[in-house]
Structures are given as structure tokens and as C-alpha cells.
Image (tube, rainbow, N blue to C red; front, side, top):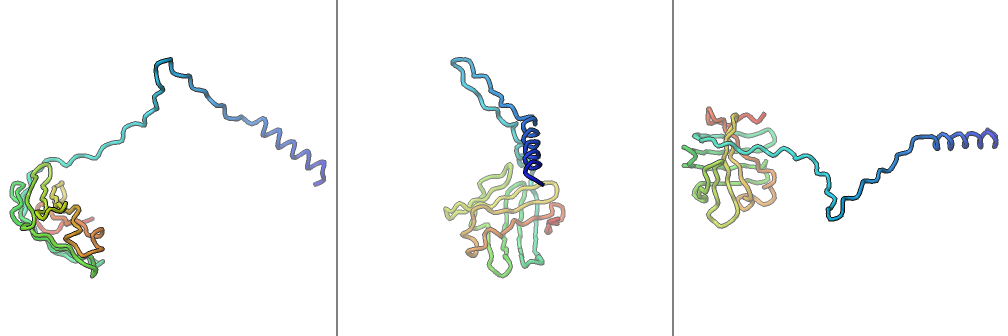
Length: 170
């Protein structure tokens, strides 16, 4: 391509670009004196559904070992949302374990979920709730009850509300 053709091509590209539709800046009108502009708010996000009140009655035992080495041995007896017995130990592979016994907790809530607070003054809580497929026993802020370094991998235990055995995770 010679210099004349090159210049002609460059001119053609520049003309095409100049003829292309350019975005137009839209100026929003200023609010009337004494008023402030309000930002457009995004639509509200759906909120998490609250835990429905459910009277929990279960005499549960869940003892199993997963393929990844996670083990649990949990026994829980709840009558009309009152925890009568609880002993739960879980292992995170061979790295360590967590252990919870009812004697170390007092029940502070029955609805909409059951809540047990550690009596040692720590912030550790055990929570129990039921959905149609399972009864969940979970912990919150209970690092003190676990081997150091494993707490983030210590999952809740799930009971089948009909049989009291371990619930299917899938």
C-alpha cells in the first residue's frame, strides 16, 4: 500500500468514526430551590424467610463417618421444644474435634428456634430448628469447645424428624 492509499484509508476510517452515532450526555434538571436531589434506590432485595415456629419433639441419635473423615456422634432428646438431653461430639478428619454436653449449657429460648447458651460466660450458643426435611443442631461462636484450628470446618448435625436418625444431606 502506497502513502496515498494509506492516507485515503486513514481518512475513510476517520470519516466513518466521525459519522458514527456518539453517546449524548443527558443533563438532569436541577431540583427546585429548597429541595435536594434524591438518589434512585435499587428495588428492595427479598429477605430471608424467618424460621417458622415449630414444636420440636425428637429423640435423636446420629452416628456416622463421612468419606472425608468427618465423623459425628450426636444424641439429643427434645420434648415440646425443651431440651432434655444433649451430647454431641464431632471430628474434623484426624485434625481435631468439638464436644458439647447439655450440662455446660442452659436453655434461653424455645421459639422460633431453640437456643442454648454456654454457662461459662463465653458467647457459645447451640441452636436447634426444624424444617420439613430435618432437625438441625448447630453451634455459633463455640471455638472454645473445639481443637484449635478446626472450628471453621465443624458443621451442624442433621436429624431426620421422623426416625430420629441422621438425615440425608443430599
